[in-house]
Length: 302
Image (cartoon, rainbow, N blue to C red):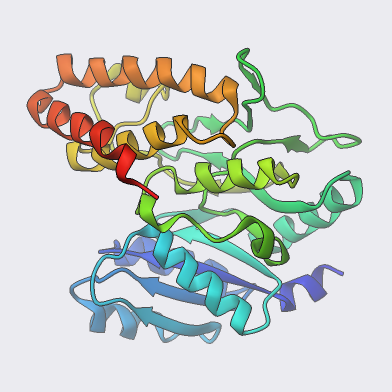
């Protein structure tokens, strides 16, 4: 059964000015197990990139966008390509992720096991994420109440967990669900694209599951001397990127399908993080400008 699902699956890798060494390592891992398509978001040295990627026999297409259209649109292009080529499942990847051995096979086995035990249609399964910089594990979170809950065991399982949110990279999508849930929200461009899609999926009655059966190594945010970042309590991005995270999360606060518990907790967290950056960062003026602009522009999103 696992082999059947592998034949019905493909991987979608989104790139933008990638570290070639890290990207080729990821593609080499995928090449052993599944077909894949690369969507490049307007990288400058695209010819060199294409030459490096095209050596993999399981690379079925390289779609080069003329400019950076954003993560959400690139993912949608990849999902549309997968559907057009008969795929029933798709693995989503950022360019800087690294996989455990037999990642695809492990994820498919986890999907099949969770599917048998789920009471609802299973929209996606996500791997355990480990930050290679800190070796901290990202927990699978439940946002349905104000009280923080994470890593709640999925019914009749010892290695699967209930989840209200799965990080994009490594997630295995059931493409049949796209018809009802919809594609990624392109107006978000980059940040919280996965969060918004997951909230939408849950609001439509689908299940999301996290699993320990497969591990993906992925650094969230940028390196920083900030003690809260180094301890893994919060992720930090450059001021320009903070514009999108601020805008998109404020937009999600107003969405009726966002869990109330998440809205309350995240608003507190967002306020604290914003004040911390504005007060302590050497780029405090830039952070203030971009965060303020993001909050103001949230109402313009569709």
